[in-house]
Image (cartoon, rainbow, N blue to C red; front, side, top):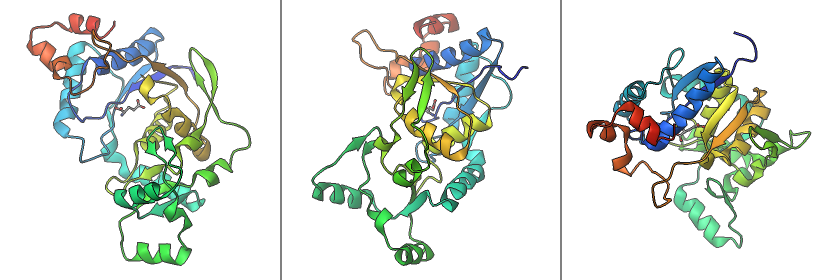
Length: 282
Ligand code: GLU
């Protein structure tokens, strides 16, 4: 295997059964790897214990195998690697790039309502920075009391580490400029979930040597933040290929709640794997 071997991955969150949109995404990544004699990895992004369920993980593996997709190596299950994400958070913290945020959703909503401007980023309204301004002794006392807190990226501090503008390489478009500031002080660890999607996905893509990140174009804005995390952690930069999202006959995006479009229901209704792959755009 040469240094330039292509490595792709499919990284679903087990919050429900796979639908046609997932099949499209999985086939896209799988085909790119197989056509190039590269590696296709499967990763289960189940760090949110409230939304993810183990039975959906089992169903994902079964549905992919039924579709005829094979993956290389072990399936990485994120919930089994929490200490690794914790170590990344510690490294960022030690450099003064994170701060604890004690705010509740209601606190944040109140603060935003009271302010004149309420800018929005790809993940929702931008955090107004309340806890960034806490005096160090108050911060320490609240942590010592065991007050629940999230960890936020100090975006201004993170951007101050940059010597030149961040970009990413989108396969069919070339170099695109990143604007991570539009995420504001992004949450990298939630009160109830020890690490965020943004942190875990970039950590794992680096650890697993993913060279081509393929995913739906709905996640394209997140790439700006992912590139910043890669820069901060000194992780390699993959190429990105964001693909279009499957829509139904009326042009509406296929969502997980469209039960008719789950792979297992189509299978139960008698569809063959080839038919489902065809409907998934193969
Ligand atoms: N786990 C994410 C999802 O299911 C996808 C992560 C990615 O491909 O970057 O939406």
